[in-house]
Image 1: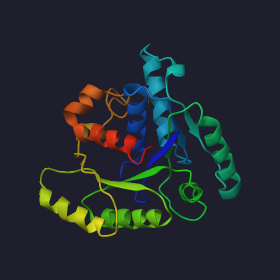
Image 2: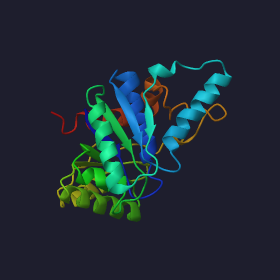
Image 3: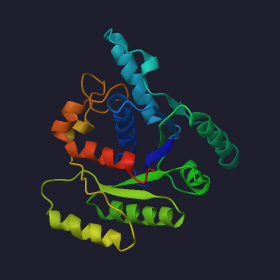
Image 4: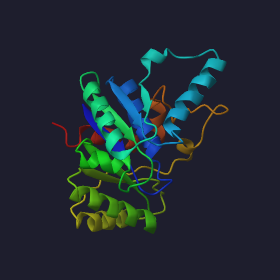
Length: 238
């Protein structure tokens, strides 16, 4: 079983959306046994999306068989030492029945936070960090990746919300700047797609979904996303 998390200590970078989309792609397109541990208390946005989708589909008489959906387990009241052992045991128990476990953390990276605890315990195979053409996000992402790498954690950075206005050479220069610290940056840059940020059909999530993955539509509007997922799912694997 591999453990992967899109994570950022900077809010609004889309980490939960990417964790959701990756899990849906792994489960519904690749046919892998996938699940999510949702640490993002108290919001639990990923879990909330699932509940909202199911309610919407039930109202339309289109409710899916929930046994066919990937499980989302909320980790509440996380306490560093006590809860870490609980999570470790959960992961050990899941290892025989899952191919991939996705971890959705809150946006904090301090002592006692689950993301730091799990990294220090060696329980995360890969952390994927979204970057944007924004000074604060670039600086925060680079600092986070450097700290994680110093802790022995594998990381992969990528550029998100890419506009057509920026010159490609600027990204090349930034990749060079990041590589100076030994950081790895994906060549797959994710376009700033309005459709990906909007919910459709009165509150149901069409593109950002926990019950399906619209592969054809995603290929049309943001093919680099699927290519990024291909890279992430095989990055550093055995």
